[in-house]
Length: 550
Image 1 (tube, one colour):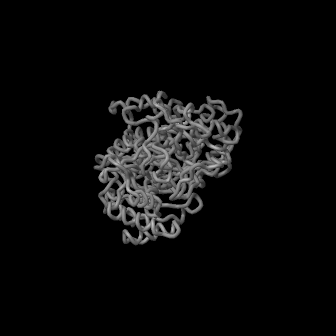
Image 2 (spheres, one colour):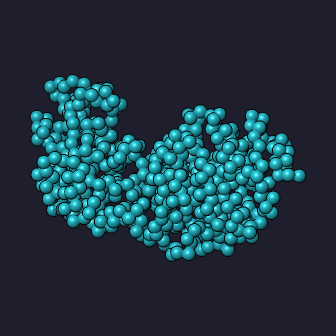
Image 3 (cartoon, helix red, strand yellow):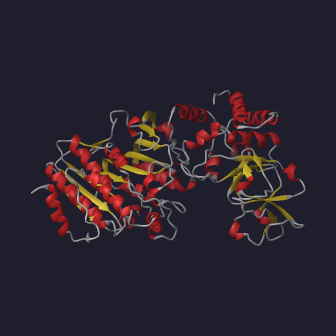
């Protein structure tokens, strides 16, 4: 009986409803290609809203095959976990790779989780065909498709009870991506290991790390946002204590990785191994022959140039200061990034060392409606919004506002609202958010109090950060010099090595390394003497003062 005929028979006998999807594999079609076709058909039947709500972005076939190359089975039995399997394309691609490179393999034991009831019949179709395809190659597949929520099913692990669960040789996943409300049951289950409103994918990663056998491997495709920031600090502390990172692949384009689903997201593939001793039946990642403290970072623009990817070797301590509070993960993608990281590593100054601080604007639009004014009155003061801040300058008041819609640009100053205002002193104002397709991460403007000296206070909206001196006020040279530094190509490139989202947090700015104060002042003085302030002129000043080439 041919594989296709057996598959048709088993599909008809399936206990799950498949009448809406009368789809069968082509002759000699690989299981991963069949899963990809099922995914495309399914995606055409559901709304974008459904996919967004579920954080559901199926792995494209080229990336699934690429991920399949990251693990090599050396034993006869391999136990695999796919925590959010979708259609099952990652499991299929991984199993195919095992067959071609490991003639000793006899059995694959697969546990897959999926909560979308619309996907379950399709996932079973995929795994049924995978089982028959493997059978034709002399390999047995035993799979269990679980419709429980992966996080809640394993919540006991997050509470510290790690002795009552199965362990896996390999865990692969393209987990869902969306922020969890604080009152979500999954957030509550993970409250000891996460902070604030976290993204669900980080909980998937952390549970996976705890489910690995000694020496077992996990391979995930996720956003880059976990690499830095206070919201992911507790996650990084836990995750890096559980695993050693072996490989990271960076997708430099925001749009090409999940182009089919029109997703703008900075993504990466991370491959890591569980700490402790290796198990006898272990999986080896590529280049495992190098030191256990080495990390390989490769990069491509997107899917189309994966075969032309470049890679470099790094020591773990170069990319992660495991003894630091934040444990930020730096991800250089070329030699220029390496040089920039090396420059910052030689500095040991921070804002706090100079007596400076960074805070987020206190005025939240919807909470302060009664104080926000369109036109000035006798006791109103300027209100600065994100759109008022440009590269090395602020524009207040503005006539057009945002997208032609005027913003109310004054704030009522009285005994009830004064707690939301700041003294009219010198500040460096920075945008907290960048557009997903913005060419810059850092956009800063020097604000000098003398330009609006008729006011004793100013208002700063919550989408801005501001840097100030804790005692007194920044000097003109300090304000201009620090603004120039933050707007330089040097700082923008450095910031991009660890920041993978649109948010520029006060925590990241607070921790960023700086040259000595004399250099910052000299930079400010030279910029003040420039005839025209442009990116080229700023970079020229930074290059001359710091004696580095940009």
